[in-house]
Amino acid sequence: MYKFLIKRAEAVIEALPYLRKFHGDLFVVKYGGAAMTDPQLKDKVIQDIVLLNLVGIKVVLVHGGGKDINRMLEKKKIKTEFVMGLRKTSMEAMKVVDRSLSRVNNDIAAIIKKHGGRPVQFSGRKGALIKARKMLLKGKVDIGYVGEVDRIKKAKILKALKKGRIPVVSSIGIGADNKLYNINADTAASAISKILRADKLVLMTDVTGVLDKSSKLISQINAVSAMSLIRKGTISGGMIPKVSYGLDAISGGVGKVHIIDGKLPHSLLLEIFTTRGIGTMLVK
Picture 1 (tube, rainbow, N blue to C red):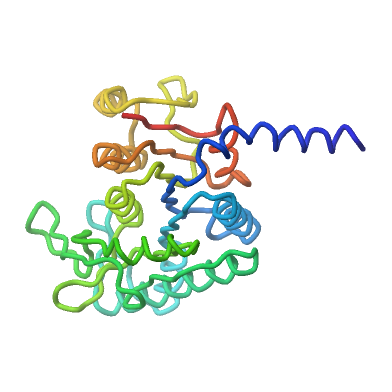
Picture 2 (picture 1 turned 60 degrees about the vertical axis):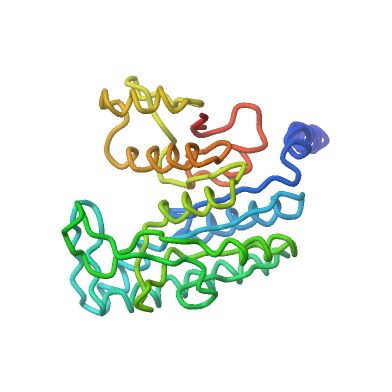
């Protein structure tokens, strides 16, 4: 019995240098993938977020809701069409996206409260945190109510953080036309991390991290090497935008970017508070 307890104590001691190092830092966490749909994983992710907050690390949680949106669109019999990897979003579909992300936002806030945290919700028109501009692919292809980040209301986030609260942000923006626009959650998280000059941006995915040509995890990689691997095709598919958003964040003043597997329970703590980590860290 004592051996098990000693191991638990040693795990806490291993985290001590990192707790001291990161106390007072600001992390932006993009939450998505399987970690949002599996109830047990969801609970563990939110536990991690609340723990970071309680030990003195300021956390902004940014979320999407792709799978939930897909389910609701299917239920409403609204056809989903993708153009260059982005969801073409009609007015009818945008209403579904808004309702879906609002529901996800409420769910996350409720779990934060359950674990002793104090959330502040920013979803759709509620809080009106993200100002958006309409996205045109290649400058001319209209894909409906899909937007890019135009401006972030930084003061609202800082006010919440100063009070020890946890901002929970859905990836919806409001345009100059007062209409809602669907924004890619990674894009929103990267933009928020840049405007806040965050110490870390954490992108939760459904894969281990960046892999080399032998399919082995690359624990740390700098911007120059990452761009080289993209050109060589070693980094490919869905990992390209993840790495690109990370590199954009770093060039915008973010300290480090972590790409981690959200399917692993407590992946956030394992990446931040252990010597080896479990994902890929991008550095300048």
